[in-house]
Length: 490
Image 1 (cartoon, one colour):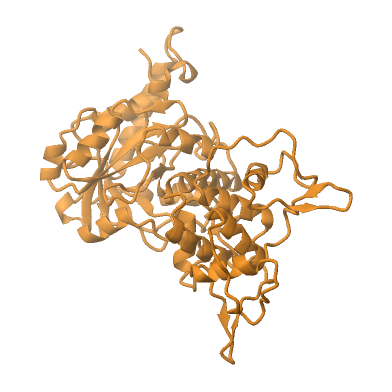
Image 2 (image 1 turned 135 degrees about the vertical axis):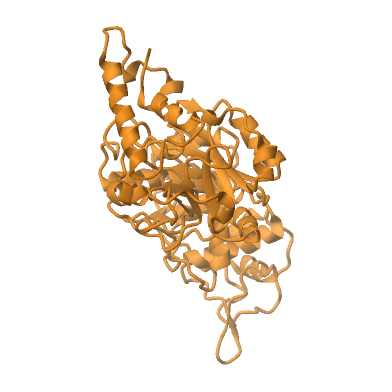
């Protein structure tokens, strides 16, 4: 007979009653783990962990590793677990393969309004019950979402995010789907933090998050305990824009992990009136519906400025995912100028990332085929949107790191729209743009479309400031307005 931590987890998750509450429950688990370890070591024919099948090794439910690591003071309460109806907020649940076939109608009748369903773990395990459980929750009238059990030392965050999305559970603004949920807890197979430094862990989480954002338009929620997070990320405080699903089986959610001032979801018990774990949403039913439908803030440095809506739109479309800072914060740097290489990427994504095979030899002497924006730059050139410069010696250059000026931006967008028929006015609407300006037609076309109307100066005249670099926040506004007019990637 094979024994494993995951099979022990299965025992706890599928038993008819919880393994105990408070410190006595933790002690009971510790005793069980000791017995398992002794039994696993007995007999020459017993398989070790590395010989277990992927299904057994990777079948961990949300919270399954926490009880064995955290003390009574950290995780548990000696008070009785309250019923779902008495907990503050909107009741819900989470399930995995351990619950198998779920009676969703009964769960809904008992008051469950939402459910998270395990989709995957690492890059080797998919919940065989996922499709039925996910559809079942929806058919019972619940909001539902999918979660991924992270194994950060097994593969990159991006690889695991892409594997998770193969389940078909990507978030969409349909008002029925909850954001993807990243389950971060103790390593089932080794050191608590997977042998990673806090900096490595922060980078891994950001890699997963960036991939989910770029592919679904929304940051994932994060499930964790305060103890694991503070210990394994070094109290990283930059993830506050990710909804927090706090794990604490107690009468209160307790002290929250570094970086969060409030929780969105709370797993307060590992058994109860619903199958699986018991959760509550921190708000009303109406607020839960709004949480499902709206992607929420994405960048920590965008907090209500002039182009907040447009920048968040840009992020939600995956056109720009910004930068990840050392503490995990995702920033947009709104006042930084847009470089020509990044501009190519923005326009390519605005067009819906069309199929394009970049040439094996670069047409530009200053853009190597290994440049991270090589595909985007050569796509832009292939479309005639920006063909660069011909130098004195006859070679072509793109000047990828130069900032994009406002006059050139007008030309790029005019060409992206297909160079529509347009007659420029005989008199310039801008005092700083002469009718002889090589970009006069494109600038006035941009203004006629309401994409950029320039500035009204103190004396009442209008200026365009054609040679000023385009700031990243203004770029977001240009693209949002362009998309509203032309809907190229809708």
